[in-house]
Length: 317
Image (tube, rainbow, N blue to C red):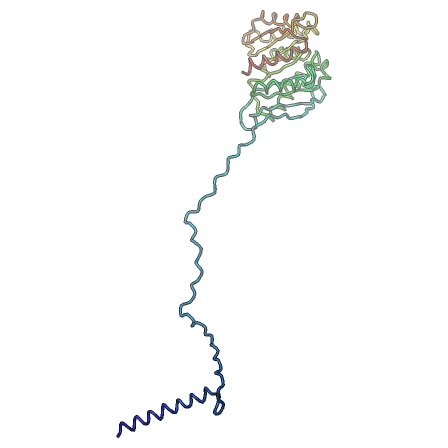
C-alpha cells in the first residue's frame, strides 16, 4: 500500500509540470495555435586569462668589444718648398740703401743646419734677360738641388761708384762690417763657406775684396768668384792693391780661393786683363791661395751663367 502511494505522488508531480509547460507553449491559458517566440543567443566574452601578457623582448646586448672604426688614411705633409725673402739695408759706410733678396733652399726651414752662403753683387742687374742676376742664380741652385743661401745685393745704379776705387773701399767695408753681420744674424750661414761673386765691374770688385782682406790679414770671404772682371778699368790701381797684399802677408798663408773666368773674344771680352791678373797671382805662389782661370766661348755678359753653374758644381757638389 505504501508503494502505491509513492507512485501516485510521483505521477501527480510529473503531471503538474507537464500541464504548466503546455500552457506556456500555447501563449497563455486559452489561446491555442500560437507560434513559439525565438530565444536570442547571448554572446559571452572569453574568460580573462590568468597569465599576464609577456613584456616586449629587450634589444640584444651590445658586444663587449665593439669593432673599432677603420684607421684614417695617412695624409702626407705638403712638400717643403724654397722661398725668397725681400729686405733692405741702409749703409753708414756708403751712405746708400741697398735692396736685398735672400733665397733659402727647401730644406732650410725644417733643419738646424748651417748653409754655405753666396753674396751676389749686381743682384738686381738684368745681364741675361728676362731674369735678374739673382733670379738666374736662384734658378741654377734650384735646378741642381744645391743646398745654399743666396743673397742678391741690389744697387746696380751705383756700380761705377761702389765697384771702383776709391769708392770700392767704403763698399767693401759695407759688405764686411754691415751686410754680412746683418744677414747672418738672421740666417744660419756656414762662415767657412762664404762666397762673393760679381760680373764685369762687380767682377773686378771681387778681386779688390780679396786684395783688401789679404792685406788686412783677415778674410771675411773664403771664395771670390770674379767673372769677366774689368781689370783694365783701373789696371795700375788693382796692381798696387795686389802689391800691398803681397807685402803685408810677407809669406804668411792666404787660405782662400779665387775663380777667374773670361770669354774668348779679345775685342768684346776682358780676356787679356783677366789673364794678366791670373798670371800675376800665379807668379807670387801665395801659400794657401787657390787661383783658377776658365775661358768660355760666350759674350761678355753671357759668361755669367756658365761661370756660376760651373763654380757651384765645383765648390758645392
